[in-house]
Image (cartoon, rainbow, N blue to C red; front, side):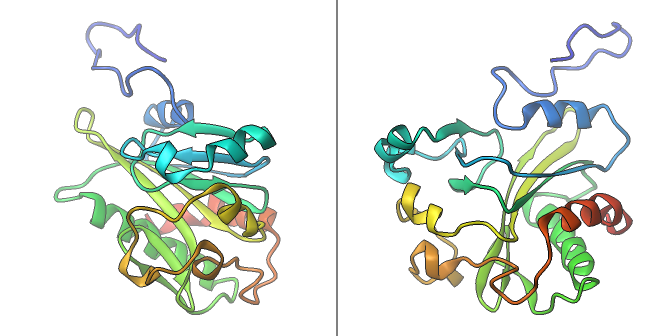
Length: 219
């Protein structure tokens, strides 16, 4: 973590230790021109939970241990997720504008994603709940957020299900204790879908490059 700064420019640490999932990218992005956008392909299966989550209540910990699946904590809020190959992960660090709290930040970023994906021909994507994107009523993007006051930044991360294995969700996650209204009690496999399953045969690699190149234009 960058802490040894000149006294004239010193600020409180951007993120407190210990480092959590993607904290290193957040710290790096905090020192780059804003908005800082970084996208990558998820390479392995792992479970990630937020600061308000109870792993024992939300994760099949015994199955994770048996399968050797890593379980990580993240700094940003939101529910517990399974990350797996076929997902595009997006990290954004930006300066918060006046009146920008979670709903406004999520909305602005997701409007940009909808526009960029529409350029590929993907229709019917819409904002759902506080922090999701869905297609035909099924979730394709889940996201989480950390809001900081000094400096006045936001730290956003999301996973877009492009061609991932949805069976992993019910394998390692219990039904969540909290859910958005549009879920309507549906199990993971009925609540989520992928872009490929929705009829849009985009390789995840192309979306990584597209988001990295185009998202900034709309933020």
